[in-house]
Amino acid sequence: MPLGHLFSFRRDSIGFLKKIADEYGDIVHFKIGPIRIVLLNHPDLIKEVLTTQHHNFVKGRPLEMAKELLGEGLLTSEGEFHKRQSRIIQPAFHRNMIESYAPAIMECVTRLMSDWDDGMKADIKEEMTRMIIAIAGKTLFNADVEKEAPEINRALDIATSLFGRIPLPFSEWLLKLPMLPGTRRFYKAKVRLDNTICKMIDERRRSKVDNGDLLSLLLRSHNENGEGGQMSDQQVRDEALTLFLTAFDTTSTALTWTWYLLSQNPEAEAELHDELDHVLKGRLARAEDLAQLKFTRMVIGESMRIYPPSYLIPRQALKDFPIDKYIVPAGTIILMSPYLIHHDSRFHSDPEKFNPRAWDKHSHNQNSKYEYFPFSRGPRSCIGEPFAWMLGMLALATIAQSWRIKLVPDHPVEFLQLINLRPRHGMMMTLHRRK
Ligand code: HEM
Image (cartoon, rainbow, N blue to C red; front, side, top):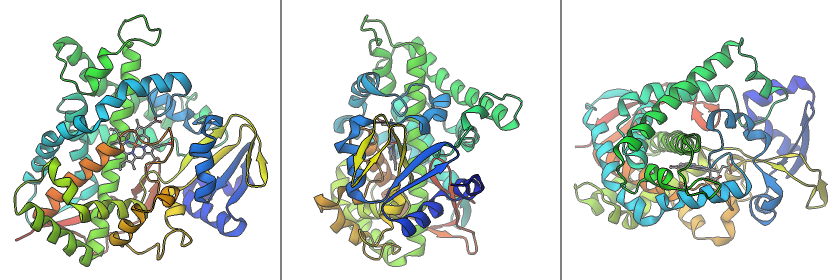
């Protein structure tokens, strides 16, 4: 690909990838400078990479820049080290543990609503972010970080605006050029995020309290040499920051798009209200209610079909590998897009329409696993998925029970394709108390 195309690719990768898939089919090879890239645009091909041949792929080059921020955390590490860390962290996401987070989640949701007035206008992306930062801080680290939420969010914005999901030639050089303003801002933001995490770790080490949350698991675990010592501070920091950052931007983005879609689809909104009124009868939701809140689940599932926060999943091939009738050489970067697959009429009927009932049918079809993959699939899929579902459902149920949230007329709604698929101009909405 000529370097001239690089800017449109960077500006609108979804648009670019859709165009080449429409033109060239389900396996498209292209280059950006010296970087060889293959787009796979069919669930069967995606299954090959994420599951069947997963040993032959690493996060690799696309995640190199994220490593500069996250270090060797669960998202960016590889091989045996990743497996070991994953084993240590898994218990924090077991069903029983997640259910025990429900009261803390509810406390943060109700606190957010207590700041709202009838008829108030607010950027719902900011509100959801503030709420999820408070929830992630409280449930994973037993720390109160709500007041720091705007600063944490700004630091994440700055840090992630420097690297997109797509590897560009020379992009790693950016971080080695401290005279560039963007690089200086990146390192300042990194220090800001480090301070929050290190403060939580220090406080917990000093208090010596072990309440079984994620931070306790990390601090209790043995170091990688199996010598029985604690994980080094650096390792704890990398894991804690990774989990904190992966949790809040994805989940707040998913909820923001959900409010937008509900405001555009009054029938679905009315059906959601009926379910909440019928199941909850005016009381606050609890973890035990989730099994009954079927339509609430469909609404979130369908929202992540239309706007999957992680819209692009990259891998890098370790060795040459066969796919369909081709051999793809080692080193190639593979791109797979939940957004493109979720909007493909071959796999989803009427794909632009928000139809939560259709998602229900889809979710029961086991063959369709790779046609719907907002949390990725295979051994490197999202460890936080069950937590994200519970958190999202409790927040949606609790808020929608008392509030209708309407898009401010003429507010522009566009994508910002950074690490996650965010609304470029935030989401200005009016909050109406339900009578
Ligand atoms: C709606 C919310 C969420 C979405 C859409 C989402 C999506 C994803 C996706 C697509 C991946 C795979 C990335 C890849 O293969 O390159 C991933 C990985 C990951 N997610 Fe999530 N996530 C969400 C919420 C969370 C939460 C709440 C947490 C933690 C509390 C979390 C922690 C992680 C971690 C640690 C990984 C790396 C797992 C590994 O590589 O072993 N995520 N997520």
